[in-house]
Length: 407
Image 1 (cartoon, rainbow, N blue to C red):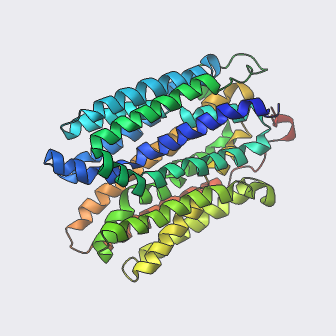
Image 2 (cartoon, rainbow, N blue to C red):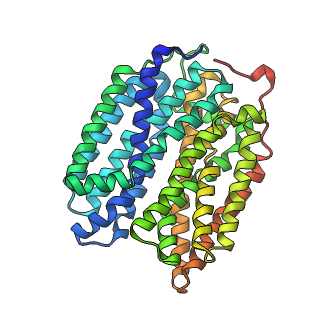
Image 3 (tube, rainbow, N blue to C red):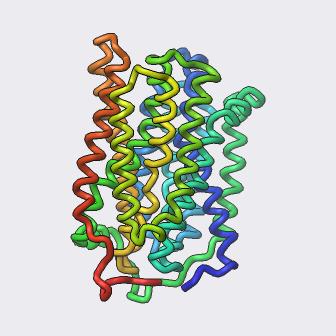
């Protein structure tokens, strides 16, 4: 069924919520120095807070996927976002220790968990599969604006309002966003094939053999650009090239802007290539190559490194098109479970990648050569992505015509 104009206000409300979701997953990079100084602790003491957001966010995908088809995206997303974000931000505003922030970020992760999936569920239930990749990639591009807002604008707000005042302002904005979703989102009609299954639906998705070669790339592809942008770009440029302050912020902003641009550029490419696989496969392969080049020239040129980081951000965000490829093999009754399972792999892979590369840097830091430690991280990303690309090459481009599901 085509997306009618009356559904647009609800989709705009969900897009705004997704901008907030992207903002919250990146905001600690700016807030941590201020919090560390006030609490009298080291910046790394807040690392568990970022990990908690992604852990809770990933685990929430299972109940969300099971409930989307039964409760509907409007009530499910509006209620969870209101509870999680408002409770988390209220706790954050009263924080006096790092573990308070960790608890708060866990609650915020709960609130943000259903937003992107609710949008994808509506797309999948109201649009033909051929349009899904375009819409999901476009939404990624819109959401990536949250990365930009979490940089200089957040710093300005903290200077004007203080960090606690900024948190309360974010609570008000999040409350308005949750209310808009509750008021404006329209639930799609129930699947023609009958009621969607609950948690057992995930087992049905796992039985779809065509999805198996796609899963390793889901685990790795988003983890590479998001992991570099969110965790390693700043320390790498600071320790290897001595960038700090505004110069460092500007360099990171280049990668964040490139990620936003890349999401929008990916949106129409599958139609030009004739298939989603024809876009994702070379995109992921080029990203692996860029990571290898960055690793090889890790300490050669600051300008070259910033350019390579930007290219990794721009080329690496093929997740929306990749998800569109997987969607083609999902029957209508399993759309909720299918897209949330792939999102779980993506977010879970990001968290796992951060933990593993963190251990790698910790082991190599004692050698006293920062470029060697960060070069090893980029080599690891290149190797993992290359392996996933080789497996993804075995995935079918399209389901058999008789299995092709359209909404």
